[in-house]
Length: 162
Ligand code: FES
Ligand code: FES
Image (cartoon, rainbow, N blue to C red):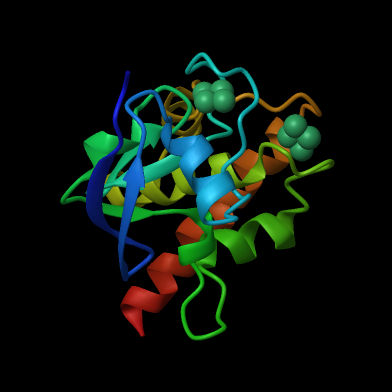
């Protein structure tokens, strides 16, 4: 018989503690235990990027990883990006560019774009496409998503220069 294990970690800047089963995935934990529905399970195989979260600042497919490995880590989800009621510049850019249709893939894209701009503040189109190859959009909003990356990069550059 499997037994639960207590894990403690930081979730969107809040310290949390809970018992998880050995087979419980991060995406199941987020949606079922914390009612966080921004990261979504779609392919369940690490192929689509819809379930992207950050663990200790690095993107991770929450559908493939087990919750009990989160013990002692810092986890950030799309719900944690807005600060003080202000959307993250990447979120604003997606709205301005109209970079979604159904929106199912959008949280995963936003998480990856934010990480892309952390590493490449002024990415070329090739860099954008290469970095986002692990994110799939069934509505094919790709041109607008690339536009959103450019808008977000410009917003960040203006904020840094101010
Ligand atoms: S649902 Fe996790 S990568 Fe597709
Ligand atoms: S906007 Fe519908 S899947 Fe991307």
